[in-house]
Structures are given as structure tokens and as C-alpha cells.
Length: 153
Image 1 (cartoon, one colour):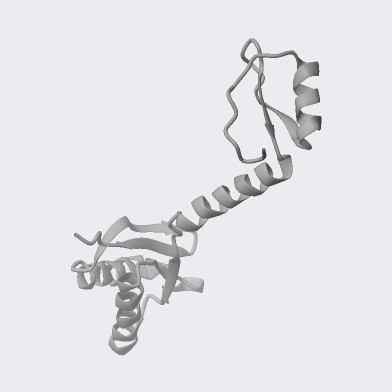
Image 2: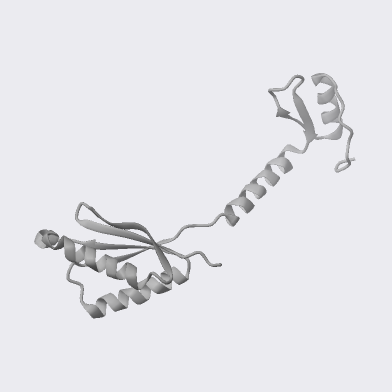
């Protein structure tokens, strides 16, 4: 009898409890706010299991955002820049966002314009595969810029 489709019927709570106990199942309240309340005779543990399974499937299909960081100094050399640019390209190709920042240590904060030029140069080099989400912005001792991968057509 379990697994069979049963016609819905209106009955009192006592009758519903008897039906549930005769079948060896649980009486579960589905919609308590309506009049009369809607209840269902089901195996509660199986119901909970199915709910968790559905939640897990939804969670696994959700897209996870990965952010990779690249750290520069205000006086980063050309070779180091090219090396980090290559990494940024691979991160964007994998679908991750890139958070590039210039870290100013001590008195190097006077080179804010060099840091901004460096980040804009990076953005220009990545414009074919990435989109600038946040333009370079100074936050404390860091100048931060975020680049997201372009959507594939």
C-alpha cells in the first residue's frame, strides 16, 4: 500500500492519526495556515532525506565565485609584471575573478600614481579576456582593482 496514490480526503485529526498508525507512517502537516490544515500521511524520515537530497543538488549546481589575488609593488619590474600577467590570463581563462592590488609599504605611498598606472596597464593587457569590475581604488595601504572574465557567447 506504501507508494500507492491515495485520493485526498477530508477527515478529522483523530481519523488521520488512525490511518497513519495503521499504515505505519507519520502524519505530517504541510500547510498549517489554511482552513482546514493540510496534512499528508508519509514516511517522515524518507521525506527529510529527499528534502536534503534536493537541497544538495541545488547547492552543487550553484556557481561558485573564485577570486584569485595578484600582488604588485609600486615599482614592479617589467619581467615580474609579464609573469603575473600570464597568471592573470590563466585565472581568467579558468573562469575565476582576479583581484589585483598594489601594496604600498612605508613611504612608498607617495607613488600612488605609479600604482594606478600599473593596474590600468594590467587592465589594458587583459581587456580581450576580462572586464574591469572595479576601477583602481585606494583602500588604506592597498590600491585594489577587480577583473572578471568575459562571458562566453
